[in-house]
Length: 226
Image (tube, rainbow, N blue to C red; front, side):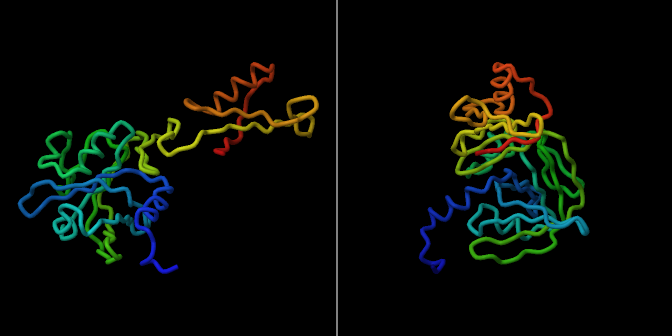
């Protein structure tokens, strides 16, 4: 099927099945004023040299300023910064007034309490349909150790929480072994122990269920998201 017959909304929803980080791209205009907007199409590219890229819509506010800048920064938002993402996704006049920020070594705005930030020199700007790919060479960075804010299927989620915004229920399943053989539950209809968790940590919930059955739980190997 040719690309020009795709339903744009359906294609956007399909792209949205891939969970991403949420970032705010920032730079300074020729007068030194901060500019920035929310973007989730960010990825690392190379360690040597240190390169990353972000895709920017040609319709984005401050597109011309951003793509012409000698330096730009990527602020990877932390799980408590959903409000920052929303502010910088909207056409507000002074979005920076509501954010605690400072200048990185080359003058790009860096937010407080982000999961990580990268300041880059502009390495390349590559045409890509209705977007461009801004490739940056990292000149400074810092990682706080905070969890990043995630986005999938039109909703936000955090790594430590049940991603209900992305749809579906988390199901935890235990495969138990005793004396070299699988250890299922039941007398006639045997099954593996499982539990669907609508909230909280599915692994801990399943462990609690097994302990109620008199099974000692330790040394978890893996958790499957079904």
